[in-house]
Image (tube, rainbow, N blue to C red; front, side):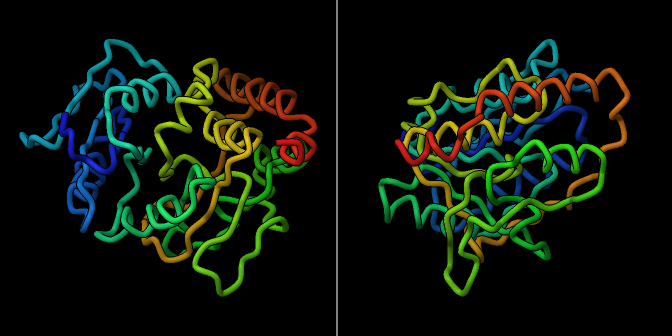
Length: 254
């Protein structure tokens, strides 16, 4: 591991093929930021392959540990003061990480920053803490955006939100450690939203950055609501909603 890295970029992969190569190369191409890339392979078949580069480390799991556990594994492997969770189907622009680091370096109260993805509205990936009605509408494919009424989305380069999706999140390592990382009892969603809200409940800020420059496909429609996986996800969402009941009151008291 590089002791001089500014950011540890953790990329989780599971049977992603060439998508992983694109995401990895985009992280290594970051400008003005020293990166260490930690790829966590969640039992891909065939196993993931990474380039021979001292800035890249591959961790291989024998079984799929789920998103939260595998991302925690990658984050805890690194030592940089900042960490980036990057989806394998996302692509950073050369200046993305530098721009996402700006609010974190400018204000110690900011624990996390996330981009407005290219060619998408801010509400497509961040906003106010999701409610039961918001989550139900998304599970039923009746909406694909979030509520941004709590955000000041104007001409400012960044604004406060309650959460941003985990496709690209840059955060302080000490904040990650303080809240215990991602909750590994969530196998696949909504561990990313839960992470953000736990940061907010501890008094930290989460911001969305307008011109960070990152590509990520729009939300894919959820087609498995009645499947075993869909039922597990619905139960996870129910647990998340119960945990964060009274969220606004908790934030106000933080």
